[in-house]
Length: 292
Image 1 (cartoon, rainbow, N blue to C red):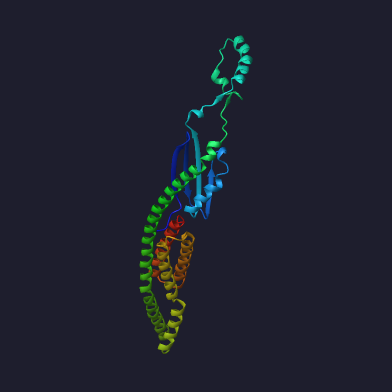
Image 2: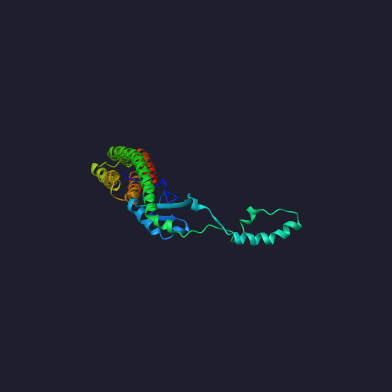
C-alpha cells in the first residue's frame, strides 16, 4: 500500500548519565527534505541524521529534534568561588549602606560565577546511540505513514468506483444523444420543407447526422478515462515506487478528458455525470497530495 507523507515518532533513552530525546515530525513536501535541530555539542551529526532519514523515508519535509539532558551527578554546575567572593566584596558596602542583605541566589546569575561547560566527549561517543534512537523514531513515523496511506488508498478507491460508474452511465447515454439529435433534425427538416413544399431526402438527414456524430464522438475520451482509472488502481497497489506525483498527473489527465467530454457532448444528462466525474476527481486530487 502507498504511504502518506505525514507522521510523528519519538524515542528516548539514557546513556552515561545523559538522557537523549528524539522527536521526528513529517509533513507533505515535493521532495525529501530533512531539517535536523540539535544542540551545539551535537553539531556534525546532521549529515548522519539525514542518511538515516533517507534510508527509510523517500519524500516529505522531515524535522528531527534532539535534546540532551544531564541526569548524573556531573550535571551539577560548577561555582567559581573566587569570582563569587569578589562580587560579595563589592556588594557588601552597598548592602550595609542601604540596610539590605546580600542575596546569594542573585549573585549566582552574574557572569563568571556559574560554569556549565562540558568537554563534549560523552556526547561524541554517544553519536551511534543517538542515531539508533533517530532510526527508532523514524520507524514510528514510517508505520504511521503506512497506516494513513492505507486509509487514503481506501478512500481514493471509493472515489474511483464512483468515477467508473459515472463513465459507464455516460457511455450508455452516448448513442442516445445521436438518436435524439436525429429525431429533432428530422422533425425540423420536415417542418421547414413542408413550408416550401420541398421533398424530404433521407440522405440529407443521414449526412447531417453523420457530421454531428463525428463532431460529438466521445468514445476516445471515454476509453482514455477508463485507461487512466485502470493505471491509477495499479499504482495504488504498488509499494515500491513514489507514486504521489504520478497520481497527481493522472488526476490532471482525467480532468482534461472529462472537460473534453462535456464540451463535445451537449446533453443535459451527460453534463450532469461529467460534473460528478470532475467533482470526484477533485476529491481524489486532494487526497493524492498527501501520498508519498
